[in-house]
Image 1 (spheres, rainbow, N blue to C red):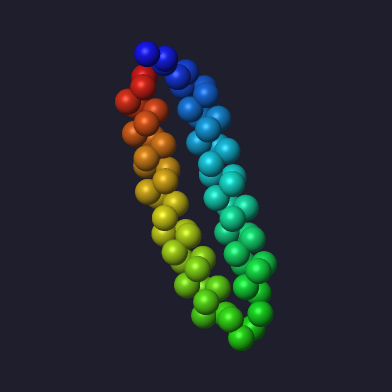
Image 2 (cartoon, one colour; image 1 turned 180 degrees about the vertical axis):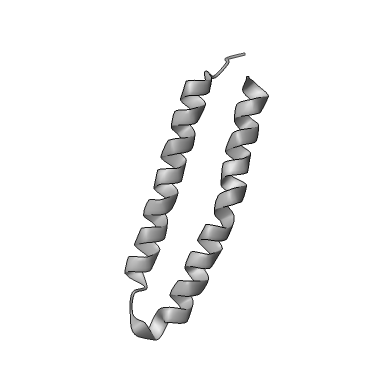
Length: 66
């Protein structure tokens, strides 16, 4: 079985977090129209609401392999 170094997991977490914020920025840019403002607010709220679960899963994966 292969072990993953904590540095590699930290790097993976940083990449996932950065990709997540790029996705949020893309959604905001794509839905920027004033008529779609409620859709933008709902989409960003959903994405930001999912971030703690993503970070917690990465944290648990790091603790499981160490």
